[in-house]
Image (cartoon, rainbow, N blue to C red; front, side, top):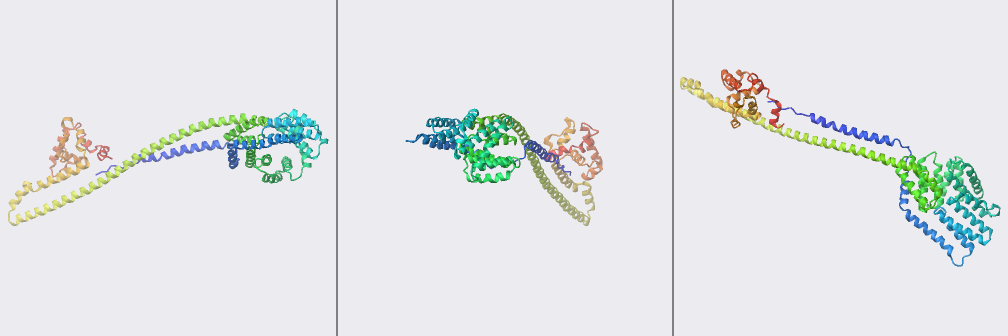
Length: 550
């Protein structure tokens, strides 16, 4: 008996599918890494950026607080029984508060203070108001008018307190002009030298522990390459002033400059701190947020750069910060173009990843379908093998039962022979043997057992034989009763590979001539007489497997 071979070719093909999936994922990773490898290596200061984004979300709340403070200062202008000098001082305070927040409002209140001061006829009051007015003109971007106003003031007529105000106003004026021109401008060096004159005067006259002096000295040290000393002094100021104040933002921004050449992650962190402080204090003329946007752009974080620069330009517009608008406008086109290009690339990447994911899902679906089908086949094969095992046990029982029956009949025949010989009935015994009646019933039982076993192994045997016979010579289906006629029984042995007529005759207790006659009769019924025996011997094994459902 031959069992059909187990087939694992499909399993091998299934197991090769993960390699394909891995290749697709590997390609995606390499593609993503190649895109990321184009970026500079500086780490983004996530905490500071996150705090800045939170401050931007609450900008309306901080703006309302700043306006409340402005309203409080404005009330000082309208106090009853106030003198002109007190009113001028109140107007100057409102202008100073508005200067970094709303330049046009600062200019309006400074102008009122200056016009009112001129009516007093007092030089000190007029010069102080003129300095405030020049500062407001500078903050609003009216540099020509600011220089004219500033140059009209005589330093010799000022006391020490007003001289500090004079030098501070002059430094701010030429600092604003330098920021407006930019370091690439042809007149930058000229105006920077003027700014340095006022810085030197302030450094010589301000107390050493004064926060503004520490800020100015830190700027000088950084320009001279003494970053470490500058940071040490500036961090002391940063630790003692309140976040949201103008001093905090200026100091944090100055510390950032000290890290520019050595650690740009810390540079970005301090610029973000300065930008956050400006938003908390409602300050709109700072350069921290545009500088951070520029840095993020260089680091190819285009989305964050785009969001920050858009917020900065809207904020500067609300505060009429013309210098800041000019500075920002030079950055917007590059950042905007890069961000739009990134969006386009992101869409392309998304489409590519979507295709990859779709391919992977299809492959995984096919893999699972094949795996499920193969598992079902294997379960079915195991079930069939279990059935074959049970069938084998049944055949063994039949064989043992047949042997036992033949043993009993042999014993019975031996007793009959002994009895006949003892009784002197040798002639009766000879007649019994010659008649064949002694073996006829045994042969029928033997044939039935052979037929039953053979048809259980090859249930479609008769149908396969019919395929080889002429249409009018085929056996009817109802003839398939589990018992084979002699012709089919003989060719059952041929199907099993027993092709010699003599061997078949011995097994079936037929004469060789009988076997030959039956075989010849079957050949005459065949479509191809000459190849019929070989056709029976070589009935397709695949068809046998289908008989078993394998």
